[in-house]
Length: 288
Image (cartoon, helix red, strand yellow):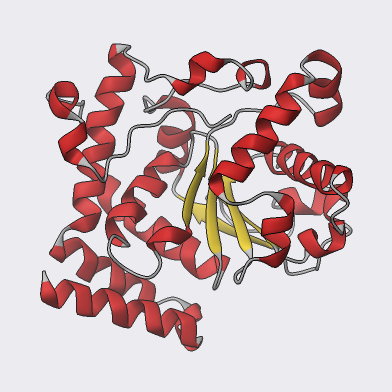
């Protein structure tokens, strides 16, 4: 079952819901989001982008504006689940109906296991990361469904990537790197993980303090029909207004120009796919 989320690309459908004025964010927020988003695309490579949970939804909204009416727009997906503290075994034991609901959610997004395995581009999962437990549990669920459906799990693994948004710290030999402690990655190719370090102020804002457009969606809610309806609480409506502002920022001519400049500075610019995307964004900016 796919949880409800307003489609901010269709402003006319939002009506008076977006009349509320959201609170201010910190001064360098736009620059932080711009650079983080450019680095996420560069790190993911020529891949689809699956933003996992609520924490990275601002990057999803920003890139939805940046990539609107481009060949990359349909690569953006948002998986609204929260399962940091529950493993697939826990879910199977306590909320077995949620497994089928999760499978329906993946299918609605076009990323059921067989679709991941046969997609033209790999699928990069993107999330704020501390220990990587959400990546682990989501991956185990996907591979569990693959096994259940008779899909080659190695074929699915070969098409998956992980982009972790980490809290930027001074680099040293003793720096904690979550993927070095993730034994579940052993059956994946060695280059499957890319981390994007972001300022602590951005990580803290997205992960701890920002009001979200949608309610949290833990496993015990996945099969609840109520998640298909829109939330009306003030905090979510204020977050909706903020999300629309971020989308509008991304879709503006000036912001597209700034973003394409940032993306062009990444090492991925050596690759044809990145040069093609930058060229498409520059052309779009010139037409706006």
